[in-house]
Length: 557
Image: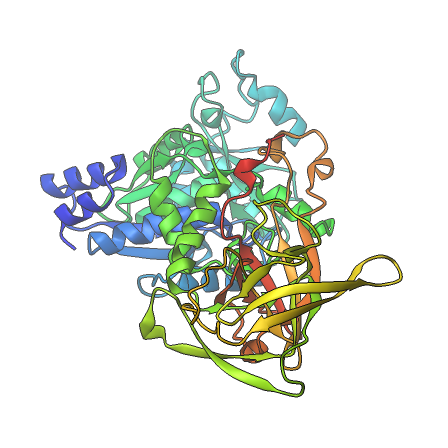
């Protein structure tokens, strides 16, 4: 794709910056990176960043690294490292070269820390955490200098070496940058660069007991890797001053100087994006795990039946800007619905079954019927369904009496069974509890197919499954995890959980679905889009999304 084509594809302020940088000769090519911290599973907000960073590299024929910013071993785990790699690959992206880790550069970080100490721009501080907060000041009052701020260069170098050697306790001291305690930006008031942690690291083991802070390591990692455009979300806007200060005051490893640009993060209605709150959902067992299909994680969306194409399409639809806002869940759902409408094969499933007996159909006879796999795509071919004397329909599709707006089965009236015959409800039976047990019907043998021989038109069409060949299945009807648009602002996090976020039904599917492939989406006609669960044993289908947006018709809380 040419630069002009890339601009036409999705113009935004970041593409404009890249176009100017390439046109001016500042860069011959672009280098981006996706730099997750391996302290949780990726969510849909990360997917936006993945699509942006990898997408720009693809469009401009540049490179994009996958780098784990692994500077905090207390919260990191190899489980997260593996899940992140799988998510990026599943979305359809390939990273440039080998996977990178900030921990690969730990020795370089330390040498740059020594350089700052040697220039009198960093010092070892023995204030405890509470004292540091006190000295830091407030948004309206400047901070005050640490009593250790003017320690000599030689003494600071000696103290930093002792920190590395493990001669101090955790929390006893930190390495701080010497910038400006009166700065209006809190991140510039002598921020911490290194802290002591006697914690084994998943990549370096016990080689280190001091670990760099994210803000110190991130910008240097970008410089080491030759990143040209370092893209992050708006909450790091003030931190760009620290990003630039560090790079301005060290000897850069290459001629390429990274520049940081911020865009708005994704805020999605009816869910949360905070890793802390996602951890809380998992740890407090409000969900079954990180890949629970109600979670906004990429693994949860995948298990629910979302496709890489739908998520990439969603990222294109919401675009890139500097305006913080909430994105409607309906936009995400529309993206997957539009994708699956084109590609998902059709099938029939009855989620709330009741038996229907066709009394004038021959006993012990079952006949095959050819039905389209996709009504708008003949190239997908036909599928074989079966018809017999007894079938299952959804109990909501029958009423003893109904007005003219009810276009399903009514006592004494006709309806068509999808891809099959016209039937007429003659009578019904209830069980001892007064619940509908069996519907008795007659059928017209001359009405098979879309063009009945007698030319009779029937308004209603309902789905069904032949009883003798029907395969039992469970259906997990997932809905939004919270019942308020912005659950992150709720005082009681648990109180706004949606009690109907999961409803389980026992029903039947066509026999061809007995061996359904996990994650492969189907449209269950008149019910919605479903896929077989990729984790649970047995035949379990997860509802991906309904055929239409029903939440927009409800009153929002």
